[in-house]
Length: 218
Picture: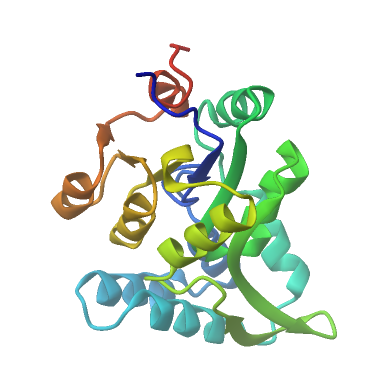
């Protein structure tokens, strides 16, 4: 029996649709706070001193008073993953809906809406008032909340998990894998991520996913 066709693919953003440097690093470098705040915060997060959501709040607090336009500028400088445009366009041309579910920032995620017409964008929002950043962040995608968001989106679209695929690289993406028939760990950051996926892909080109998602090579 043929597999149920995919109707929705959900992508993590940082490390999957975009590559380094992240908007966090770029913004800190613009403000001259990467060495004093950004990098130490990141290293402490990686060491397990606090969770990702707290890390995001700490970073955003450093930016208080900075021009909101500077963050938008930083967002435009984040590089897309190689092959990103071809894969997103190919999926949409094949009638597959595409979603971005990220613990990262909406100022970057919205570029995919603008560039490729994606309608399903879920990301965290750095708040601004009067053209200046307030130092606050609205956590709309909690670190462990991607699975619930993906399930709710699929339900709203009238889809079952058998019609859904998810692409991610970190522990926060495991819940997405569990909500989908196909879970692709792209350059997974730790063994647990690879173990939770149905497919593991090591590549710096998103087109390596095409045989899995569309049944064809690039």
